[in-house]
Image (cartoon, rainbow, N blue to C red; front, top):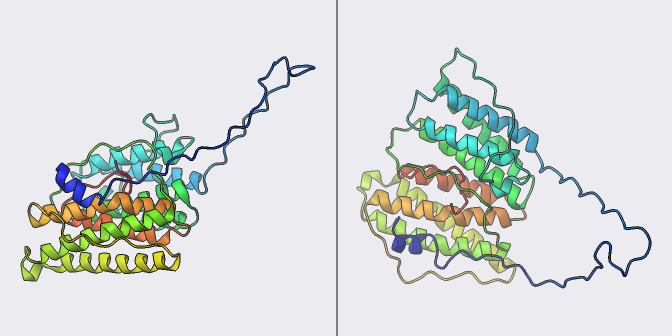
Length: 311
């Protein structure tokens, strides 16, 4: 994606990072300090981090998807990427902080060997489809970074199931990203999605002039989705006394209809991910992320390993 297009569709500004507030440091005497009398105190043990909800189930599900993908690797050109994606996802889930998406995997047992017999590709598609509901449900049970993990995995599984049944040629997928997503407060997240929705609506209106009348169904669907998102989130902002950003007079659109469609939907994904991570009730954001991932794939975009992250 060109720098110009990325500025247009990936933001009306840059991602707004939640900066660390300057806190007040509480002074403490160092262990063994002359100010302390008596025997040197023993440092208390570090508490064991509480595993995120559903983590054990998520690891089992992710390992099963990886095994199913390995069994079907010769049956579809996308499956080699899915093997790579599922390996990266499993490594993140096995790490101490899954939402940080570590660069190096944590050692763990290998997924079980796939059972021979059934059509491996059909088995993989069914496994991906079943994973969507599980991951999406877990996203709705929590908040913050782990909600984004589950919501992103739901979007990936839905996208994989759809792409495996499609003959659409798509762009080459980049390597799975690493590191945590940039966190923002929920009001900022809503405002950024509204701003991105304005750009998406403009882009889809431009597409109406580019696609043949009988092929406008994906354009109509995109327009409906972003108009609804804009209206719903504008109302949510008004309820909390916050202003929704206005649309710009125009946005730059370049390329073919397919290229513009990919730019619209791929550009929206990081903002939908920020909304999911910031939301107190992430069900709507999870659904929006999953639907945008599917629309991006419909325009021939690559399936990212982590939909909703900036990279």
